[in-house]
Length: 621
Image 1 (cartoon, rainbow, N blue to C red):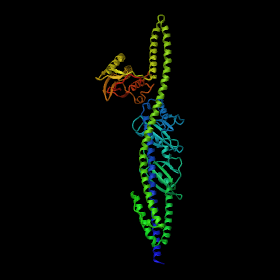
Image 2: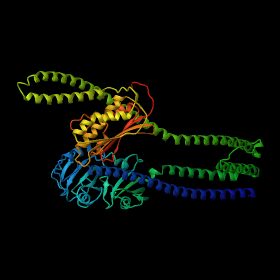
Image 3: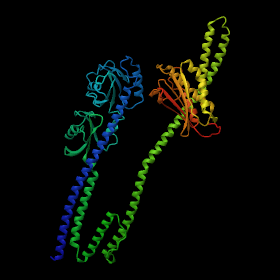
Image 4: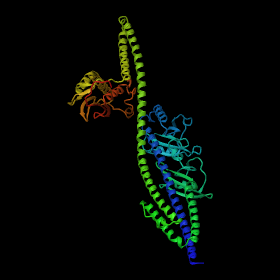
């Protein structure tokens, strides 16, 4: 055998061995790297779902704590009607506790359940671990149900009243993970196919699902899940590998575990490995064929092409692929020349394709960065428009109804007043008719005032703006309310600042101020604190607005009333219509201003009316 074939044969053997060893190393490294990345990815998935589950538990715990601190929840007054009303509203307006809410007294007896449950009446939960823990706790307690008949039940318990460690009772929120729409999505929603999930307590008992297959991997994962560190591992079970990922759940002594068949997760890796094996096999076969068929005539141009290919790969990796010199073999007239020329054309096309690809990637990055912000802004606009539309429709419907009611009420009051005038003329023959006449006149006047308020609320406010002295408006308001304040023993004070004229509708703003002052006088009169009975009205200017503040020494406005203060027909008065503040707000808003509520240094409420300082022609708003 000649030297050249022997050299070619040695070259082929060495090349084939190199390809084989390199392929084996690449396959091993690719498999190890892929498994490491897969473990990290699934651990992050378990950790994110555990965070979401912990956040859901925190939201539910805050809601239950808020309910337990409400004034209606008082187990010492032996009256469960306030608690029943509060729990009914909470259960109807919340999706947190899909099973219901319960109140247990200090002895563990269930005294109320929402919705009503036959198991509640007279039933004692004194031996339940969640009751004992909740009564001793100073905050919310999260525990799963120990009963075998309800393994997927989660109890959220907060103490009610009493001393720390010995509460008067507990408020219990009950969640069933099988039908829950707040916590269950973290366990089962939007997971890869063939995913199995489990929620485990620190003592190793499975909370969800009700039944779980017995396997070594499950036992290992359930034992490690409630720990403080998330982790993942691969376990061989029945000749098939499974990937387990677990993470602790915040705000509860729980752990969250996921399991996947390993082959379901590394399908892409298996395909890549098979393709790599095929490529390596074909490459090895091609190396042998080319080694035996090569000659000195082919060695030089092939070497040149190898150098060109390597330079192309290096240029692509560095991102500097561009026009280069043509290979010398491109001047040949045989197949090697055609190959060299084709390679030169390919390099040119690759350069153009890489540039296009780079531009596309930059464009995609720009679109991805702006898409989320645009979607969020558009969603906020749509939600605001929808809320405004619903509010306008509701106010329009209320206005039409108020107009009809007021019209009918006035007609009836006119007829009633005329009829009783005729009866009152017989007062000489029946002296008691004089006293009754005064009472009826007062009630007719009150109902007429109520119908007038309904009519004012029903009509869209028309603003006839003209320059007015704000201090004069305040002084006139004090004169109109002075008699009422004196009769109730309330002291009225003024603190007027010198300022410019304000362009406004005098009658509308006068009615707003009278309403606020009368409310303040009544609040002081109803207050149990008689040490100081005062109402103060002040004016000021600044920031482009004129301000009129009305503050009192009354009991102030409760947090619950603040949320509905300017809603139509919401009132805390015994005989109020709930239209005074709603109408006042509409009048001030029509001027481009607003009404704010603050705490007063006098101890009560402080309402501040802000009107813009700008010139405006008389117009209908």
